[in-house]
Length: 139
Image (cartoon, rainbow, N blue to C red; front, side, top):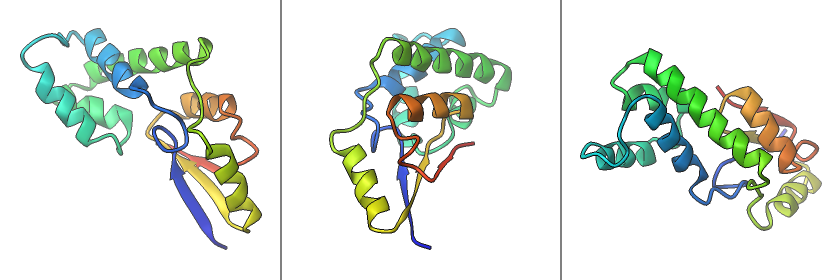
């Protein structure tokens, strides 16, 4: 079996700053001033760790305070769910055709992301990737 593994946010789903805006919403919910002097360093750290689970990134950004990280994660998920509800989530141009071409070529397709399973599944469904992916993976 041959497998193509593609990331969701920014690779098959247009990001347009949505994930970073969600992280900012999460940090605000955890009491971090996103206009304060510490924010630029937090933003750089978040950008450098975008390939990791959101909960892990938030835990690191909040110095291991998992109580605040859970609150931040909830706000992050709420932000992305609101974007879904508002119709602001769209595929990268050509993503659906690429997934179809990979499957037509005999490859299995896996989509991965660092989002929780509920959010991941809503995104995959909204992007109309459910039938195009053989598996979806997240923490």
